[in-house]
Length: 335
Ligand code: GA4
Image (cartoon, rainbow, N blue to C red; front, side, top):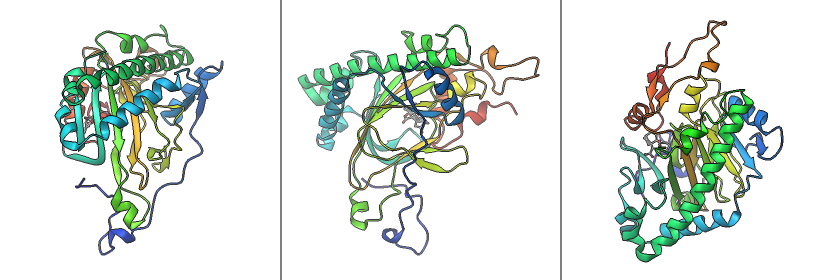
């Protein structure tokens, strides 16, 4: 793979001598047990403070997770020319290094997929022939589990903030027309890094916020995910293959009029181990209007909406016209 973005490159210093500047593993990620009575208030607090937390005791069987991981690894270990038959990822399919339509690149290969059962066969069957049924089955099973997790979290958030009805957000994700998508990412170890032994700073997936409502991420036991803290510093998230990581997306930030903040995050390539992640991006139907709910605008306190109203279709269109690291909400902010 070529064309990497190596952010610490400084003039006159050979790349191999640039010291590792990876942040330390951060021990402050809020960890929330989904089944405890105080889960809702803990989730609200985590989404207000960081827009990010780790979810444990989620009830999704490890077999469903491992099965999809193993199918994904089988796919990514195929020869490049075969995998490319499932591309390009416009809008769904296999992608390699290129992220989005505007020139962003990373040390990554991936499958972008729909969340509609059996709708990915058009992309996957030409590569996997009859074996595509296995991955389809693992995908359907996993996606239906994480969709439920996303909805449970959204309902706890609504309850925790006294928003009625409690399914105000989950019903968007459960809607048949929901535009939710799914992503399987493979970050191969970077041989160049191993050779130079400088330990880090090759970008797998550049910094960004997710445009959707919330994202449910699971990875194998390889580090790489980093989140941007409120003071602008980056923190490495210790991997945990048995838990999910949840992050707030731009749309939830808008619907809560900025009370919950979307989490800026990125993934750095691990020099030695490959990282596999699977992410469910929960989204509303394309026609859904994204605007602050009235309960987040306190008229007595003269509070106003911080954002102009837009449909998910409009936001998505504007997101896909932006660079990965862009502040996509700026365009819709009322100043
Ligand atoms: C970020 C979140 C999801 O991975 C994604 C990404 C999408 C893509 O990879 O095609 C985008 C990015 C994401 C936001 C800005 C645009 C679109 C790449 C890019 C430069 C699938 C999504 O929905 O938005």
